Image (cartoon, rainbow over all chains, first blue to last red; front, side, top):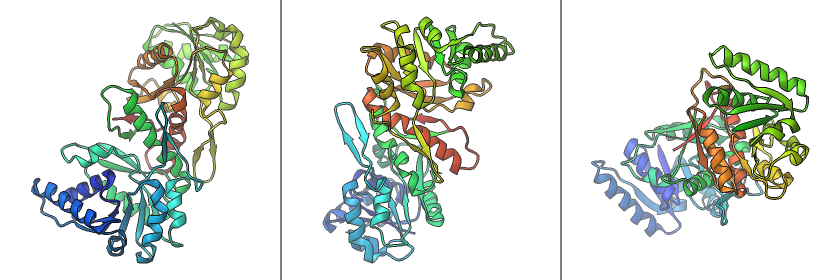
Length: 222
Length: 222
């Protein structure tokens, strides 16, 4: 399968790129608004993987080019760029290309981080509203501890939650998530339930802030 | 220490009463709006504990009487009764009696449960607004899997999150929580961070709904 990581030069994009390239045979494409940046990062990831004995090709493209080639497109961009990014790539998507939304809207103050719920109800819903009619949209990978994800020396042992209204697309994303070693994907229902999923991200940041020895906090449900 | 569980006849109240009575030497008082109900439940808990070789006295009272005698008052009532309950017991509290808020406002629809944020920002903030000036208020025990909590045969191995603006009160509640075997209490900051903590409760209900074999779901942060 071909997976495009738009915003694949950021921390969650980097982590997903490295983990998928390391643990699976899926082809990874890095997207960015500036193709040079995408190519530079893709080379960095290749070098990192090569140093661990994994020979793989990761290519970098401008976002629309990456989306054009992909079966699954991960919108690993800041929440306020999700809508624009979907519109930028919309006419390059096949009918069954799956859009994946991992972004979370947050606002910080002196106490900690707080969930900032968009008018659409969640960032995943923002992506769904911006997407072409009928395009499958899945929310996932919101609450991954980014530094742990990007560090291949660390075992994950974490859960991620998946929301979506297209059962097949959700299953595909769950399988992709579980192809990463130590990651379990749980179903949190349809996109209407995305706000509660996205709310975990500010919470784990607050837990890291207020508890000694905890940083880059992830979550397990049991 | 004396702990009053107002609404101690409900599921979270029952679980906390049984666990504290089983694992600690704290004195447990059950409060209810109807003292007969409180006494009946208290006897039930005593019988359950007695069957496990724990001889202890649990007394039942009308809420205000229970609060009057307690060092810590847990508001284990539905979210829409938190404000009334605090006002009902307010003039019975000592200056340093700690109010603990475990309630969460939720609304369900065909998709699942959703966090219903009160105007005050969180149910914990509702309790703090209703409390006498300077009364220590702590949010905790929101996301406990109620049936597991009440079943002494089950090992918990769960986290609970604690929020509060009075450091000493928060430490006391963290200690009380960690006196329950298998329960770890993490600091999630001040009451301003309570909404993100309370939001986990609808999420774990949704996870139980959408994943086979998961029910009464709890959480661990790691």
